[in-house]
Image (tube, rainbow, N blue to C red; front, side, top):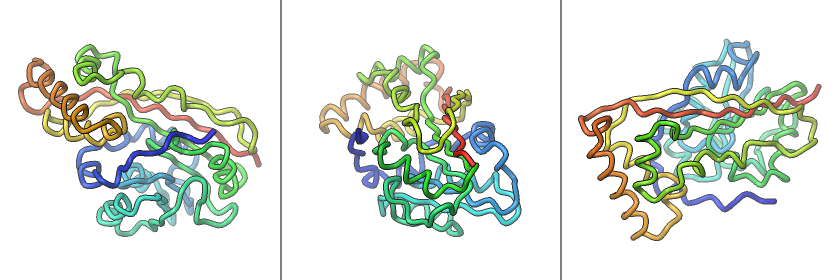
Length: 251
């Protein structure tokens, strides 16, 4: 079954690039496994957006390694190119990757796998992967086990559990992939109420609702955060998790 239609992230590309978090090093290292630091590795970031995961992958390359970034949205790619000028960034999609057969060692997907049509995307990813290559999908989510984190989502009338995308964390059977492994990595990073509310405005579950509902949700979250002792004093650390689904293509 095709994934749901993706919202127009390009309309918020600048805010997305400025306020979405990057990926923690331990999660990226686990996603890559033995590819991390290996000389000459070619990595593909599919659904690369503004380059949040691309940037993290660049930091894990060995000598002669490179990253190709692919995304269907020109506005998102424009942000990636402005930040990461050395990266080969191309328009394309998971269902139609603009690369030859068996041309990459690893395919990485950040915050995008649930938008793919898996029946088309997974065989296409298998096509471009070399034998023994790695497919890894990563999702950053708010750590809803923390009371005040769950609270600001509920204050915006958003489902705290739905944003974890748990229903998307599996691969279709076949296509030469071994059984996938799933691992969760907790992390946190500094932010402010203004920055977090701006980030919330780039979330699909905010972008896809009517304007009045969107504004009411953001106002509710802002009021909650401005009143909480954990978040009302300026900069604060926001707890998050990143889930990583990793599978290897057979030799």
